[in-house]
Image (cartoon, rainbow, N blue to C red; front, side):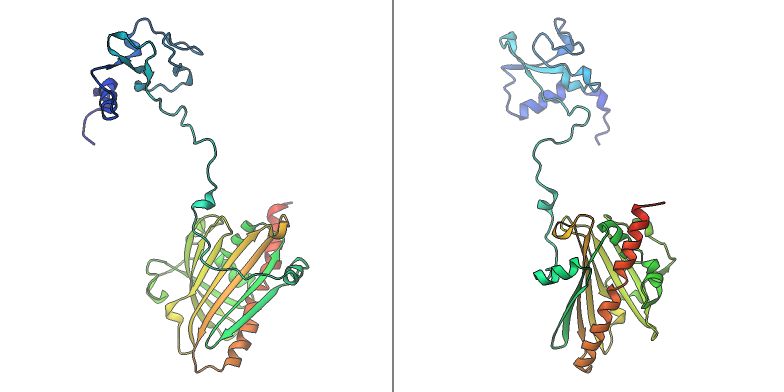
Length: 317
């Protein structure tokens, strides 16, 4: 940054300044280069006559490794070697805290499953629960699939394939994700496959897409935010602001996966958590009816599709 060639500064000058800042007394100590000491020799697999470890054998030699701190007048029989730089870019060794210690907890609470519900999951059944609180409803679906999490996420993140694998999805259109605080109508449509190289398991991504649903061709758009996490990856999808209306005030869902549930190696437990806000003008029985039908349609495709994909990916012929 100073415009001075690093080679024009002697290592001894740099180190002298450093040790003076560290509190060394320049009246008692002197910086001396091993190269300047004719009695010192460095050989592969050996040490110098002053007991300085050989660093040349590593193949990486730094100028400051050739420097020692000695008392003036040679009164110190054991000169202090300057700390060497890491050899061959050493990695941190020893006990390192687990990565999840530094991660934020999951931003949602999973439902507590009963022993009976777990038994049903292990038998291949799907668990669905829903609750209505005034004009706000919530619910969840849980299903166990015989596939690793990455197969589940490769399927969930493949938005282009939704019309082929989800019966209720008729069409799909991707959009740019540059103005997430506004409706998707302010974004630009993009070609299928755009950004697909980053939409993979383990890579955080944000995807905005619209879908034509059912034979009534309902137009729904959502923003999908996928996040890897040590406690299980998750994807939050929220209803686009342009899709709220007199009936549907808001909606949010979360996909979440847990690997090897209850010690079942090779299986993944998939959660779908849902919240919805509806207008007071809509009778509550219609909301309940719609939820009863919508939640199964949103999840029944997952288990057969993912397990078939796992067979093809993990056991290629």
